[in-house]
Length: 147
Length: 167
Image 1 (cartoon, one colour):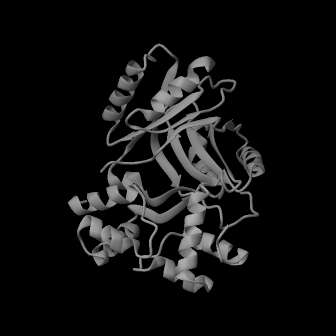
Image 2 (cartoon, one colour):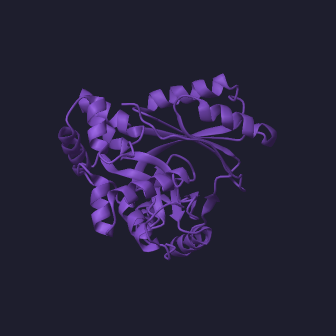
């Protein structure tokens, strides 16, 4: 990652201008060509540094629901349970963490009922109880990584 | 609603938007061609969606691990109910705290305030969290640092692709 990448990604984390030619507008700001921006973004998408860009819908505003959930998975079953969860589309993220609750995942569903059903399905599939921790209040959301 | 798009075109556009903006010089023109509309109508509709608060953000999704941001900790704390709002607001504004939520306590789970802190390495993140706790006088409150050791799945929430399916 060079200085241009850093400037480009830091700028894009603040959002894309909502205009006819967003890359052209960014090019003016960053003093480079729009072609260079598009080419570099394609490379960063291809190598997996970026997953995508554009609008991220707030699924709660659209009637959908999220929750954070956790399980205590016995060590000898960890890989098996990971594979089971990874096949469930409602599982958006899944992290191993250092705690007796060692598997932490985010469920994202089109409806609040979908969360309840997904938890029941995961409990049935794995035979393990799920700790469901839906958020009660948001104090800050601002995933921003200064580069 | 001032949009001139039909309901069907609006749904088509949402699906296209979820997949991201095309890397062409006129991305909204490209969308317009796909839904048989005009660039102007597409831009107007996207602005409407934005003003209605339907977007969490409009930018990029970085795979932070690909950028060398390898340490991520979930700091969980048990804060008295009467103080949790005030502490949540203060920690939510603290530098380095990317997410801050209040969540319910459960049997066997005594913590009600959650903060995510990311950084390049574990020592730096740990030092930062210890400093945060000290600054807010929270060292004596029950708390725990849950470092993540593996990410098995990371994707953006997709909503418009499959409205009926639950899982």
